[in-house]
Amino acid sequence: MASAAAASGMNASEVTSWLFGTDKFILNLGETKIYEGDVLPTLWWVLLSTGSCINIVLLLCRLANIGQDRYVRKMTYCSAAFVIACAVRSIWPRVDVERTCFWDTRISVTFVGRTLATVAEICFVSQFTMTIGVLAEEMEFPKTLWMSNIWYWAICVAQCCCWMGVTTQRQIWHGVEESIWAMTFTGIAISFAVLYTAIRKRSVSRKDGGCGLGVCRSAKSGYAMRFLFFGFPGCVAYVLFMVLVDVPMYINRYNADQARGAKYNWFSDGVLDSMSCRTVSKSLKDWEPEMPWMTGYFLGATLVSLWLTWGPKLDPIIEDHVDGQRQPRDQKTKSS
Image (cartoon, rainbow, N blue to C red; front, side, top):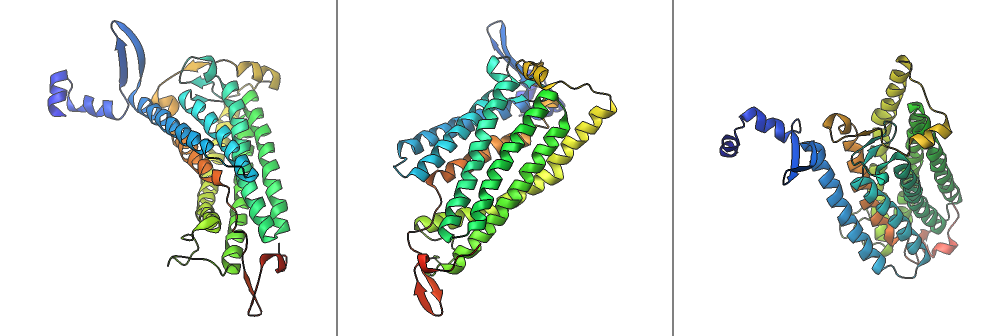
C-alpha cells in the first residue's frame, strides 16, 4: 500500500480518505470521463448489483423446478415479483422524497421505483400471511388464520400512506407507514410464536436429530419449524429497528420540515413531480443514510423471500397425545 501511494504521489492521509469514500472514484474511457462518484457509494452499488444478479439466478433455478403445488407456485410467483423489483431498485437506486437518483435514467425516477416497491412489498407480505394462513388452517387455529388476513390488508394501507408521503413530501406519512409495518410484524411474530409452540407441543412424530427444538427435523414440518423458529427473532429485530430508528427518523424529518416552513405538494402535483430526478448524485452525503436499510432490504429480505418459495406446511399427518392415546390431526380439539 505504501509503495502504491508513493508511486501515485499520494500521502497516507490521501490513501485513507480514498478507502473511506471521502475521495472520488473516476473511470475514464480515453479522454472521456464515463463515471465519477464517491468510493463508498460506488462499492455499495457494486455490492447491490452483484447480489441482485445472484438473486435472479437463484430465482430462475427455483422457477425451473417449481412443481405443480398451487401453494408453492403462488409463493414462488410472489417471490419472483419481489426479487425482480428489488433488483431493479438495486441497480437504479433512488431516494423517494428527495427525488435523488444514482443514475440519470427514466427507470431511476421515484414513480417507477415506488410502483415496483408497492407490488413487491404486497407480494412479500403475502408470502408471510399465506404461510401463517396455511399453518393455522392445518393446526385448526381459526383466529390466527383470520389475523393473517388482517396483516395483509394492513400493509395495503401502509402502501397508501407511503404514496401520500412520496407525492406530498410530508415525511409524517412515512412515519405512519413504518408504524403500520412495525405493528404488522409484531402480530406476525406473535403468530410465529403461537404456531411454533403448538406444532412442537402437539407433534410426537418429529425427528429432532438431537437439537430438541424441532429445527433439525427433515421433511415439510422441519422446514416449517425452521422458518417459524428463525423468523420470530428476525421479526422482533425488525420491529425494534422500526420503533427505535426508522419511525423516529421520519418524525424528526417532518419536525425539521415544519420548523423551516417547508411547502408540500398536492397529491396530483406530487405524482408528476415524482416522474423526474431532482438530483443525480453518487455522493456519500446523499446515500449514507439510505445504505444500511437498502442493503438489508434488497439483499437480506430477498433471500428470505426465496427461502419461502418451497411453501412451509406440515407433514400430512401429525399425531397427538390425548389421554395417553395417539390421535390423527383431524380428531384433535380446535384451538385459536
